[in-house]
Image (tube, rainbow, N blue to C red; front, top):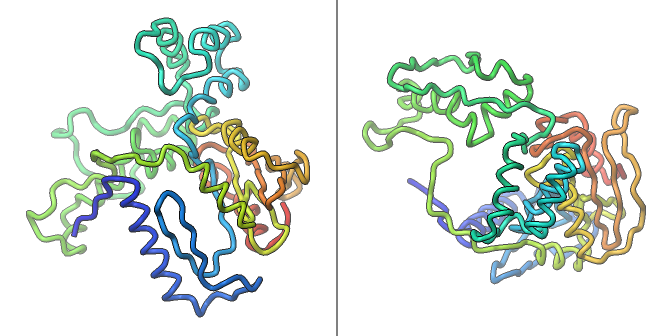
Amino acid sequence: MKLYFLREMQQSGEISILVNKWFLDFRSKFRNEIGIQPLINLQTMKIKLILTYFQGYLLGNPITTRKEKNEQIPFAHGMGLISDELYASLETNCKGEYTDVDSRNELCLRDLNYFDEARINVENILEPHCQTAFPVNQHKAQWRRSLTQKFEAILSCSVIFAYFLTVFVHNIGDDIISAQWANDESVRKALHIREGTIGKWERCYSTDFEYQIPSSFEFHVNLSAKGYRSLIYSFLIAIGVLFYSGDHDAVVPFISTQAWIRALNYSIVEDWRPWFSEGQVAGYTRIYSNQMTFATVKGAGHITSIFKPEECFAMFTRWIANVPL
């Protein structure tokens, strides 16, 4: 069976069914610690999601609106990645709009080209660009079956980032290991794939996916209005939401996340302060009303746990145990 998600509404509906079935199958394993109703109906944009014993949610480096990229430029300037002059020119010519740029605005497009020439690794601005290790001439390439096989182009990257590229990043390392494994004939036989039914396996493939939700901002408004704790993080009672961001991620810069949190207009309960892991500063946090907490993870990139696993584990375990950062 092939399952393709062609639009966001379809994807959300399928995930809703999956989550509900999982909760129903395992509901005896959960306790209702705060006496909330067994079923909570969450309806936003005609999507009805029924969750059992819903106590909160956690988001990491969350893409919330289509305009996240607008904060890439100020972030890059603040981190010393582009010059004051280029930043001033971008501000003047683009007027803060870097996502939906008018094709007639030649000065803005010129400045954005200059920005691209900075070759910023948006996944983690501290890490180098790693060129793809996928051979140019695939006909001459010999498939290697060992998952520990080293690739020359990856050796220039740090060990953690090389693993991240190899396994997770679509445009750099998606096929390097997973495709070699999945396209191996012995693997296909072990997986009982009938010969001729499936062509070359690709971890990421192109589809005509339809984005139907331009912003998830109102989801957060509705959930926080119901009193669910969030990390960006709060452990005031047994319900919550945690939002966290790697502070070296330029895909979804933490200043972009902070911007839409400010738009919620919640008062600050506990102001900006460091939080610690193993006696060292692991990042910074701020607690808002409506049980919402924001936290950064110092030195982490877009997939925060890849870069700072110990710090993320400390953050998560405190979250689960209802202990403040």
